[in-house]
Amino acid sequence: MFKENYNVIGVMSGTSLDGVDLAYINFEKKESWSFKILFSETVSYSSEWVNILKNGFYLNEDDLNSLNNSYTDLLASIILEFINKYRLVDIDAICSHGHTILHQPENGFTLQIGNLPKLGSLLNYPIVCDFRVQDVALGGQGAPLVPIGDQLLFSNYDYCLNLGGFSNVSFEYNGKRIAYDISPVNTVLNYYVNQLGLEYDDKGKIAKSGLLESNLFEKLNQISFYKETFPKSLGMEFVHNNVLPIIESFSLPIETILRTFVEHIAFQIAHNCSSNTKTILITGGGAYNEFLIERIQYYLPKVVLVVPDKQLIEFKEALIFGFLGVLKLRNENNTLASVTGAIRDHSSGVIYKC
Image 1 (tube, rainbow, N blue to C red):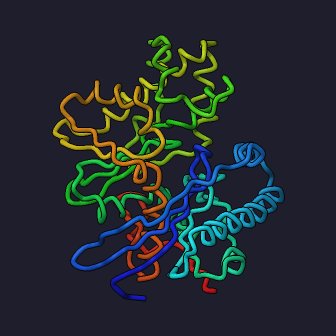
Image 2 (cartoon, rainbow, N blue to C red):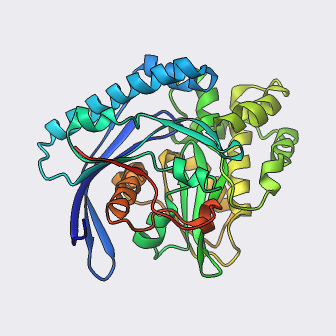
């Protein structure tokens, strides 16, 4: 399927559980790749689905299979509604990440629900999906996968930083693209904000009102993951097993927890950026957290932090999973061993033809 233009729908659901991001994108290949996001939308999950996905980590195998089936139905209905709403006709493929429930690359296992073959029959378009499983089978972390898009679509930035459920970074290092997860972000911040009856901390105002607890800050920075070398990636297991128990051991007001964890995020991000960095592109929901951006800038005073327009902030991951799908259709590498630790670069994902 080698041609100059592709029109695809990129679909992404992240660990922060904001909803399903959809973007209809045109990709053009001449000397290099370029893109235009033509339509984009986030479809929020119902409170029932948020609870189901939040607790999917604890399900047994039979219940996971049932969840996978029902989530595939949900995803198909959301995508079909998007197609109908924007009257999309010219669609080369629907490129979907699904939703991560389990991510245990150290055990050779990762599960993104919503990638069942019936997604193709329900939508009647070519589907490219299940991008992580092959990489784990090849000895990789199965994450992060976005860096191939950073390399080919956003090469004018020194670092590409995503602030979503987790923070992850991508950059060139000794002639190769390197990327890895840095720390939890919204998986932890939203966990505590939800206890105040809010979905998120608007612009980081609540965190800014809290006090910095230096002992907690120090304890969080001592977590062994931060001393590991890349490639490395994080999942909800890390939050439940490593982060929340430390925070809960301090019995602090939520404002203080948020203030301290924002400081922790900023400190870890700065620790992972070279001192000669000039520009960092920041995307993901955390880019709206003005207090977090302020604290990152505090640790990186000479760096230009670029927060782009709302569409790119919110839909960069959907954009790049659309791009991963295009590369898969062309049988070109879309996963980098230098990033994931797999035994080789490869073209990852599964294609379901209609």
